[in-house]
Length: 160
Length: 160
DNA sequence: TCTTGACCTCAAGTCGGCTTGAACTCGTAG
DNA sequence: CTACGAGTTCAAGCCGACTTGAGGTCAAGA
Image (tube, rainbow over all chains, first blue to last red; front, side, top):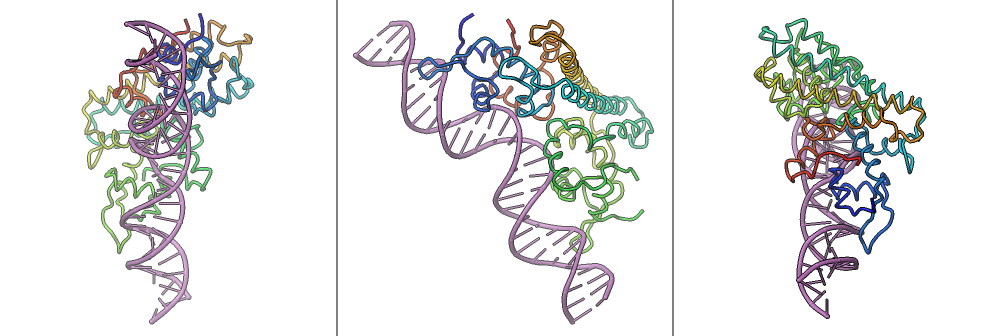
């Protein structure tokens, strides 16, 4: 397969052209040349984009992702860091699982006030546990920053 | 226990005072009155905040959260919607799990180019699957919006 | 040759969730 | 009585990840 133009890359990855330009600007992908003004991409960019999309889906920031990718293949990251990232994800998963259980329980539980239900409270507690140590997903980025910027107060939500 | 001022609520929940004011402004919490200018909170706000924090940790937007909370206890949401939310979370969890496995595998696998490793490719595929149907976490909010705004191209990353 | 439409650049806008800063108000300890 | 410090308001700023819009370019088909 020959070089592709931006439209084709977009079509084949589902990533909008504007985003592709943005990624190029950020150094996440590179075009291998131009035809006139138009970017030309090597098909290998598809794999790279698959990895980028993967990372984004995992809640990683673009900066983190580019830190994991060499100009060509994958891990510029040592095994240790990869494992660390995996563990991060693991904590997130546990947290989300607890929340899911809380939700399911709330849907099932007869208690009028869910907070009076021990099971629910337990789920809430689990979900909250480690809240501030865990690598935050998405919207928590800002919060994580603020944690380092100004010392966070206590960090645990007491329920009485 | 008596009414608390904002500092105490903050201390006991770990939520910054500025955030508490912001939440009040958004109608997520309410103060029970004032002493002079100062807000007074009923201790019940602690539970409410626990739930809000829970929701945030689950990647829910503030709007969604307030849609789940009655002025007092929890679910204004019917069981169906709670289950739907739980399922949403479930998909997210599956996606994250696949990504975690991809990461772990990348750390372990001897293949120089991880994309040449079938196991890795499989994980990538799994992680990507349903990418655009699934309720997005955090940073994907914007993307989700854009999905509805302008029709997304194909939606699957082909690796040919 | 001319037109067209896909692509380009650059600056600015958007969105959510907060934080920050300036200027002000009070209850309370001294 | 007064000063202090914790609280208040309001507008503005910030961050990440993009999107949008205006105005420009250019390869290829009629």
